[in-house]
Length: 416
Image (tube, rainbow, N blue to C red; front, side):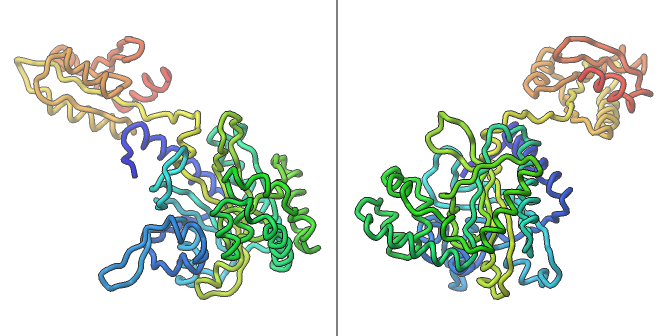
């Protein structure tokens, strides 16, 4: 858990607003769900034997004795909300969300117990062209953040139910004769029947066994294979670069068909972070009492994007109004009036209060990282003007009170 303040929260807002701006252009509408949900929502949707449910959820009893949990991810709550609100009677439905998620896991690079997540869900998507559009949207988001060249899109297919059944049987036969070579976590996954999850293991002990495991491709049904081919062709036609990673399965049990991750390319990092990740799912609506429905979505960790983004968001111009000491009049009312006129132009304005010496007020303006200082003293008052100083260049200019509503266009914008 961490506090956010100043430049850090400004960066968070810049990233989330950038994503918000892009996905709304694709017709996605915002949805908001509670931070706390009944625990059985996650045991049904994520799987009672999943690592998230067993190891990572913050779960407790409320005063009524009901088991509730802080949300560990956003998709399950969104699907529940759409079903409860009867919002799936007309399809497709395109929504996005942003909010804090909670998982009790070991804090490490890019992983936090409280993290902010931005996600999209395209509900009711049978065509592979929907997969292409959703992936292209993620590609555009990363480009807007200046991060696409630093990532690599990995895609795979988990096929339909028939394909997964055949593949799980083949994997079961393969891993059963190599159990002693697997980590204790992967052995437990095998015992619980979560065989696909073994492929998602990041434990070094498992990698040699996983690298020689059967490939999903040879167990795909004709329908699943043709659907995945259509997705790949669509991405190629749009110029979206990708790598077919046949070992990619994602960490949650509800995925099917197309799955994907935008992974950082950094060669110096031993564990590559996934910045955007998601895929198709069709059984999640059933887990909340609805009918089977094919959907696709992705989620991105705002904290991770802030950690890796090189973009420095442009901040709103800020000014500090200094009322110079005057023996003949109270300048504060005029300073307030000037401040309000400048704020009406969208500028950030700090006011000097009290009778601090000029040197101290300038230090305050510098500490606040103000772009300009606005001086108001007896001389300026008599001339019905203010003196404006660029804190970076030191250049000064006088502006008449009658032209304060043009200060942004006349002075500040040309200097930027």
